[in-house]
Length: 481
Ligand SMILES: Nc1ncnc2c1ncn2[C@@H]1O[C@H](COP(=O)(O)OP(=O)(O)OP(=O)(O)O)[C@@H](O)[C@H]1O
Image: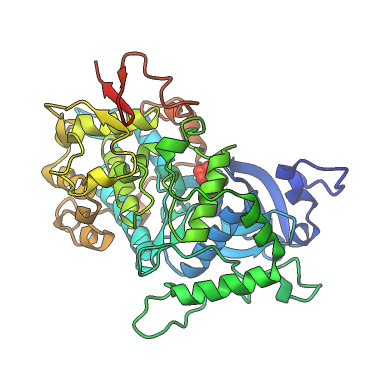
């Protein structure tokens, strides 16, 4: 699509990228390739050398600087999407210029699920699955080494280059965890007030954008101390009154939970769209250094988040990894819940109830007593969900899908798992089959991809025709048929 040079009166926000002179001067904006909860993404071409890029116009302020902050810290990680530069002028959406990646793991799974199964043999070879997993693990390892929790890991956020290199993308929900377990308050990646008026609209040029590689001895690169963050925030607030306005107009509600507060806004892949509560929770996160439980896509959301935890860590990503790996092995989503409660019930049906026995302390989760599930006498177990999988494959998934977050294996531990060094060995990246585009998961597929669009439920309760709800003194009791 040709860029529209005439701004016209009040162009719709999502098209405003076409009216940004500083961007048009450097990039040809081609077709829109995707859109998410907070963004529109266009394929683009750098005019100076023809480089293919993705131009991500982020409509949400917080999401934009979280993504920029994380991508700057992770710059140079081979399995994290590369941020070439970004444009951000006050009162306009941030536009991130990213390397263009044509496919994603969702498309790999959808493509494979359409291939015929040969005598029960999965269409994705074990060596291919291993190579995809290794790349995901290396990417998540880089995030976690830098204390960055992604919070929205799912196949659609694992982008893939033409050559088969997998890169983690969409850091709009990422946070940096501090040593004390809290999160770093959001801060402006680079203050635009410091720039001259000519430079004010282009915050980072490719030549000048380098993540700060200096870090105090003994401290992981990118793990900025709480003091440094608070200093940055103070400086930023002094320069940018908008931050103060945001804080004043939002309600602090940092301790509230998804289950308790998002029952009318828990909208599938976009649990926060139009949600006033989410905004309030995000403010709480910033103001108090605590976290919100309203993160991630439901199918990949850890039980502690489903139970409203605001005191979680990197381990929420590990649960998501377990769900992603299971899906790679079976080509079907493991826990395709249609609401938060259904999500929990699907997990319990497989792994058994969450109790003090399996995770000491879990009864203190904010919403644990709000909803009581009936006892699952005979959970079906992970093996039944992973038919035709080897013991090693089941064991790998099991090491991630532990109720107790502390028991989940870290990416580094998994990278050393014998599964990856035993036959069949991971295939080389060049032998991976990369789908032509990401669009394949919008089409019909046996993998249930259309269900991703069906994850939107206005209420946690409306989809529960066959379930028996009983009000209790603390909340609800639910019985399954
Ligand atoms: N670097 C890229 N190269 C090619 N396509 C991309 C790139 N980044 C994003 N996209 C496409 O744009 C879509 C939206 O991007 P992204 O997931 O980053 O945005 P979001 O608004 O944070 O989405 P979500 O609602 O999933 O959180 C992606 O699904 C993907 O198809």
